[in-house]
Image 1 (cartoon, rainbow, N blue to C red):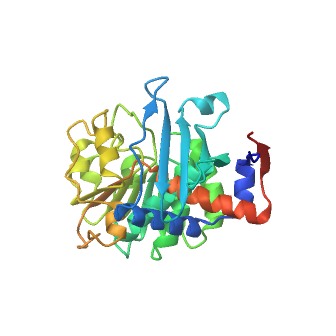
Image 2: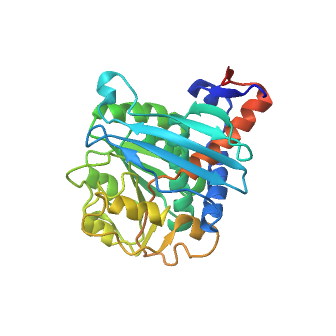
Image 3: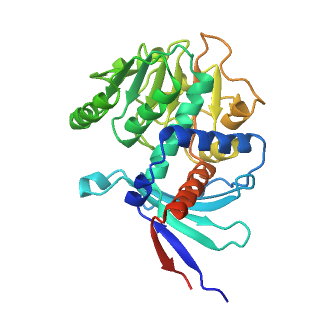
Length: 327
């Protein structure tokens, strides 16, 4: 029998490969197109919950066209920063779809941060108004950062960013990092969720799952706006979610599974389309300037696997990472 080795890629290894947000958007969009055409195998992600506000999810996917298979094992523990630890951590295991042999184990936190933002950007490309100029961000953490990076790639008319967070120090850090990166944008702190949401053409809420009190009121969700809640519907009052003229998700089966386990307490809104169906042309995106559109994408393993496959290929080409014996 041949000896089996796996490639280990740490987060610094992955970052050093230099995969850009624009490239990640392209990879994720191709994966969504494959999903919209019904060409992927991906069950709803099961999870365990050591405490009610925490989760660890197993996320497998197989993309035949890309020739990629893998599984992400990812945890989110909101109290970790108080312990000096990252809130979201995990690993992505890539497999050879021909033999099933594990090819690589790599950090999943960076991939998750980037691909989640890429999905927001793809949603905005199809569901936001092309002339969107004002972005409101609720939550100045990792996703608040990466979502601005991604949206700046697809919204050429974007000029103003309003950001708020319950932690003033997070906003201060956000401004220090993002203002120098985006000189064409006016990035300003605001003192409340209402100020961030009202008057925004694009709204991103990047807070927490399992919030017990919604933060966004229906009266603030204006006609013509596009909303991308990253914490399912927990940050939005049910009446605000119901205002959406087009409600989109990434995977209908998975979203219904989560609806049966705590999301959408007043019922999941009528589904206009899966995002992949819009990407591949089966369903329309925005059709009127005054439509309220909302994309609640809970995250799909196929996005991680698509990005992971590219990182694996780049690492092999460049001799990056560490080879570890498996057998």
